Amino acid sequence: MSKTMPQRIDRIVEELDKKKAEDIQVFDLSDKEYLTNHAVIATTLGDKHTLALLEHLKETLKPKGEIFVAVDEGEQWTVIDLGDIMIHLMVPSYRAKYNLEEFLESLGKRESE
Image (cartoon, rainbow, N blue to C red; front, side):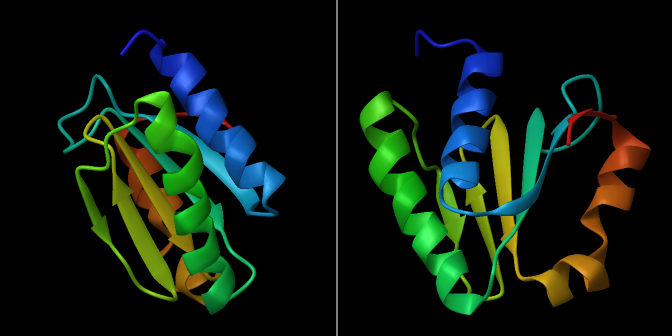
């Protein structure tokens, strides 16, 4: 893939923002012992929005060369594994309940908000 990691992350954030995902955060975990190099977390507006965001990312990122290694699809929390980038899409109640940001912050530094 010819795009650099920052370009890939920017594209993901841009696509999520374009489709009204909220509170998008990126974590650089490349120097940590974690299963991926970067994590992106975004809050969705609800169950259907979570699934719609997944479909939008598939439609826009696959043609740009992103490979969806695995997807754990749910209405309230969907995880997209791109190998070196993990995308978490969560409804507000799940995001508050699991507080994934706190866990990831303990592993690596936050790149953007």
